[in-house]
Length: 438
Image (cartoon, rainbow, N blue to C red; front, side, top):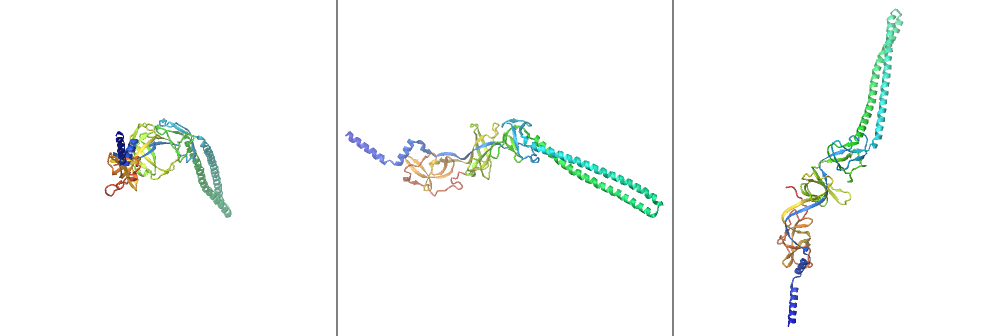
């Protein structure tokens, strides 16, 4: 009898087990085997973030540049010979850098020789003019004396024959005309001498000005700080810092900068997929790689309209400037920042992990635990971020949902939302809704 009673008990257990829904067993096994596969519907604030890394730099700075006038001095390439270490605190007038004078020495010698040549031409022209005018004046004096002699002869010829008197008059008139012509020629020679001296004088002045400019540029090869501050190196077009041995030119004359550390910004680059979410005025949480415990607040100030290809990157990115709202004297240009830009924010909503939502025949569904059963529930979704998605209809706060579809998902009936599902206009689950101030 005990054996028969035991067999009936085993049979009853088997019948009960067969009658239990497979979905309940799955859910029970899932919960007991791995509790992480079940999640609760959360309720509260929801944010969509775009996270990037950036680099701090000063919004305002004083530029330390190569000497002005290099182009006029026809100096187009200058090499940095010495440069103080980056981060050096300098006072106004302190030497920051020197440029290699070897590039300017040939030009200085050339211009110095040109000045000497122009000075010699000027001196030669002055001597020639003085000699020419001296001869002209002496010639006029000789002609005047000859005229005076002709005048005496003319006065004494009144006792001579008429023919002789006429010849004397003719000689006198010729002498008088020669004096008049010589005086007129002298005036012209004076004007010619002035024009010649002006020409060689202008050339001499031009060469002297060129020499003065070259000397001024060479003096500027010792570069001094225009104001007090901390020296920060500038970057080349390829991102490398300009240092000893780098070339500067009149077109890109910056050697270093003196930043205003009270006004800082983080310059970052957002990929073309996320940039449509970002807009000026959005709040940003800023962290520092150098000081992970420090948290700063910032605001997006500008977003580039045109993308660019950054070195070592295949994707197009857009430059974004983020202003650090609170001044911090410990911040330094070049520090790496982590930027979390809040592109969308809402309050008092239900949301679940993205993994909990799947698709069934084009319908968004979740697998909700309803007591001992698993229900395939249609849901209406809203915005999503990297981890979660908003559930606007179909679930309540605290509901338990599976993080992965059960094995018998195809056998479960779909529980539809009452009425025609309505998508919220302008959202549609788009994660790109920007947050604007106000």
